[in-house]
Image: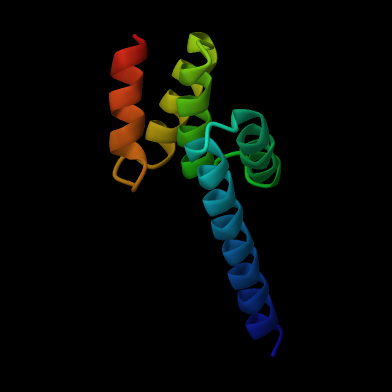
Amino acid sequence: MRDKSITRHASVRELEIDNAMRTAARFAGLGKIDKAVPIYQRILSGDPNHAGAQAKLAELAFATNAFDIAVGLAQRAIAREPNGPYALGATLMLGQTL
């Protein structure tokens, strides 16, 4: 019985992260970087290896000319999930930054 509870908890957490990612993306799309950044940072505080949050935060760092931060975040995202859904964007952004 306990295993179902753990699985359900993991699913709820994943939904919360997905919702937070969508919310941050909406803010970023509206140019509200100051509202998007803390959401991505909050995701990373709970899961420091979340490749999606790393990649999206790298894009925002790039957009604000924080190139050193952008490079580090993009490299971490690519290393974490080299074939994941954010890898191509992170790779392209990394190439532009370098």
